[in-house]
Length: 84
Figure 1 (cartoon, rainbow, N blue to C red):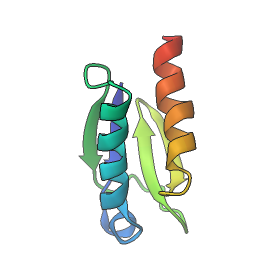
Figure 2: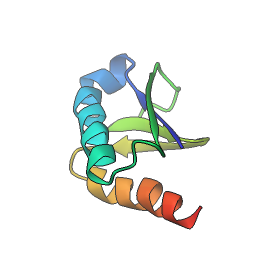
Figure 3: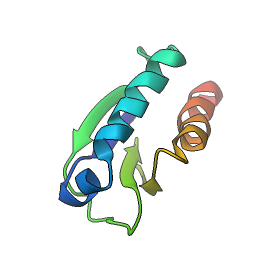
Figure 4: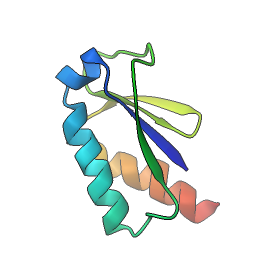
């Protein structure tokens, strides 16, 4: 699974650095180092009023914040890997 976190200007201002750190910590916590590749990306053109844009494989999600990160990670990453 490839996860790309937008680090473009808009997402940077919305805390993409924090989201990157949350992803790093969650990948280690769930022992997914061999299952997940984390990468940064520049603007995906899906700027939202709130939160960061994240692409999981080919699916684009907007509005990721530190408050909704845990639910997002468990639903879109952990669940997808377990179902694969």
